[in-house]
Image 1 (cartoon, rainbow, N blue to C red):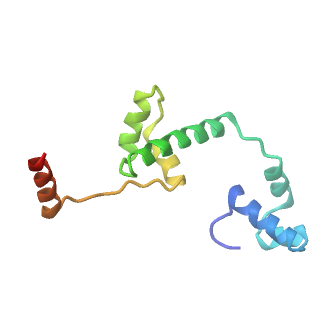
Image 2 (tube, rainbow, N blue to C red):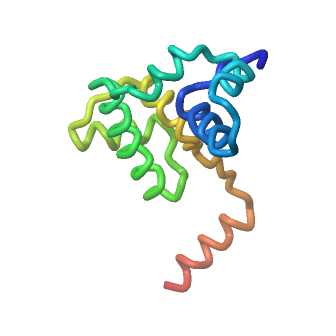
Image 3 (tube, rainbow, N blue to C red):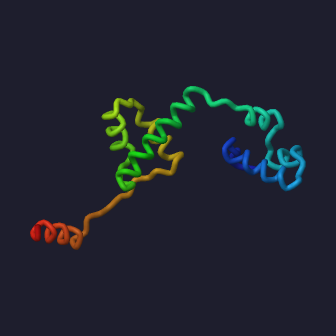
Length: 124
């Protein structure tokens, strides 16, 4: 395989599916250009303290993003986390949100949307 290297999270299911299909592990690893030692290191991997912290922050940030109807971007999520006494850097938060595919929705107010909101305010 050329180009990008496979990450542990994506490679292990692929390898397992091929082994379950009856292929030899050495052939599957050779086809994916992964050494056996790397594969066995992946199997026995224990997440570090930093990885566990990243997963926890990622879960909290994703919950905030979902509760905002997928509108909040990384800056607003950082502010919300700061209010919960969770200090995290902007770049780290941006990377974690990118990994979990949390992207804010950019909305543009149109004349009809503004008129609807004005009419709603007049009726009440």
